[in-house]
Length: 330
Image 1: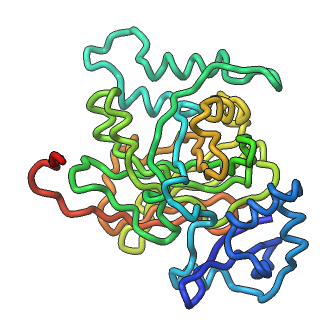
Image 2 (image 1 turned 60 degrees about the vertical axis):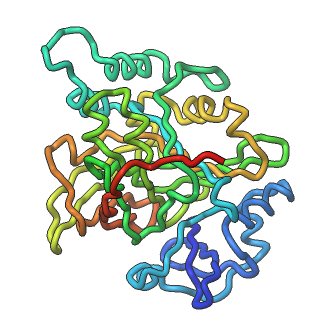
C-alpha cells in the first residue's frame, strides 16, 4: 500500500491510499499522522486501521501532482517535533564518490576519514539480528520547518556555495507513548546538501547538511524491497542534463537497516512520545561527483517503481542577506 496526502480546496489535508493504479481518499482521516497515531493507540497495523476507515472518493494523483496539490505524505502538527536526519557512507558505491570529494591534495596513500568510515561499515555494519554493529556517519538536517512538499522548490540559502541533490530512501517513524519507535513506512527522499562547503573541509559536513529536504510523494507501507533500483535525473529547460541509476535497499548497502535504525534511536532524545522522524539512509549517486552545477530552475527527479510517483523538486536560491546576524541583549 502507498499513502500520500493531498491539499483540499479549503487548505486542509486528505489522506490517499493506493493499491496498484487505484487511489482513493481514506474516509474520516484528517492526516497520515493521525492515522498512525490511531494505529499505535489501538495496537493494530496501519493497514488494518485504514481498512476499518474504508475508502471513499477516487482521485487522480498524477493530475493532482501536476496542479501542485500534493503535500508531504506525513507531517507533524507541530513542525518542531518532526526531525529530519540521515546517515552517510552506507551504500556500496558511496565511498568512491565521497573519497573523490575529500581526497588529500598531496596524494598521500593514507586512507581518508571517508574511506575509514566506509571500511568500518563493510567490516561491522551488518550484525546478526538483535546484535549491534558499528555506528555510521550521522547528521542532522533540521525539523519540520525545513521539510519541503513534493513539487515545491528546494531553496538553497543565499550564503550557500552549492545546492545539489542526494537521492535516498527514508524511513518514516512515529514514537509511541512508551518511547519506542514505530515505522510508518518508507519513502523516496532528496537529501539536498551543499557539497562545495563539505569539500572544503570534512568538518564542515554538519554545516553542509543544514538545508531543506523533500520526501514522498508517497509512503510505501510494509516491507522494503531488498534491492531497490531507480533513477536520478536533473531537468533543465525541458531536457534531461543528468541521469544515473539510483540503487538502494540492503542488497546495495554496507549496513543493515536495523543497524542504522538502532544507531539513531539509541539516543533517548529521539524517543520522545509523539515525535515524528524522517531518517535518510544515504546514497551512492550524486551529480556533483560528475562536475554538474545545478542552476535555479533545474528540476531534481527521483523515481523507483515500488514508491509510486516520482519525487520532483525545482531548485531555487534565496537572496543573500547583507551583514552579520546579531543577537541582542535582553
